[in-house]
Length: 197
Image 1 (cartoon, rainbow, N blue to C red):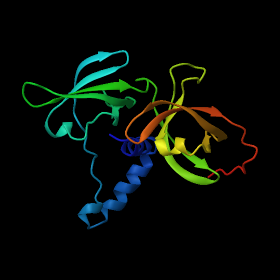
Image 2 (cartoon, one colour):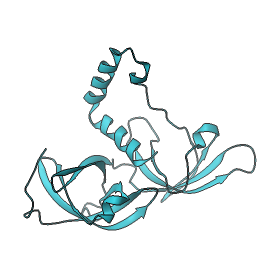
Image 3 (tube, rainbow, N blue to C red):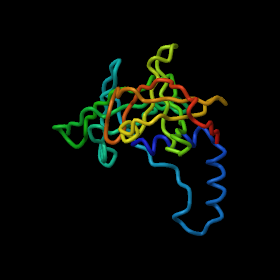
Image 4 (cartoon, rainbow, N blue to C red):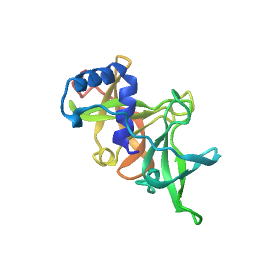
């Protein structure tokens, strides 16, 4: 749940050596708080599905923090891409404990969202999520970023596949608790000094 945690998980998965190094360093530590544990996961039951999302049921502690507007990453089977979704409905069940949660799909189940570092004027803005669209033209590609980046009206730079790209966010496709799924356009990078980290 949340942009930061989902991005962190996908970064670890894209650089498995980083996870191994962190585990090795923590193994030599005597401080219990520095030990590396497997991230807690929530188990939700799929009650219903549609082309645009799912209706899930969460019970007990698994329901904590699930609120409308929260960004969630869903994995339906091991070693499959994380599907990004937004919580659009939360209803307590009339019988027994449990929360029915409606989520709207933001990414395609077969297309993996990828961590992507963004810079502006040679200043690191952080690592966020590039979400490939379902069409080959790239027209529906987007980024999931903190909403504050869209308010700044800045241009951003990223490096993918050894190439340097400059982009500007041009519209909000979906917005939630502190994050936005934003469309973008490629812009002229010539006024910038090219910095590749």
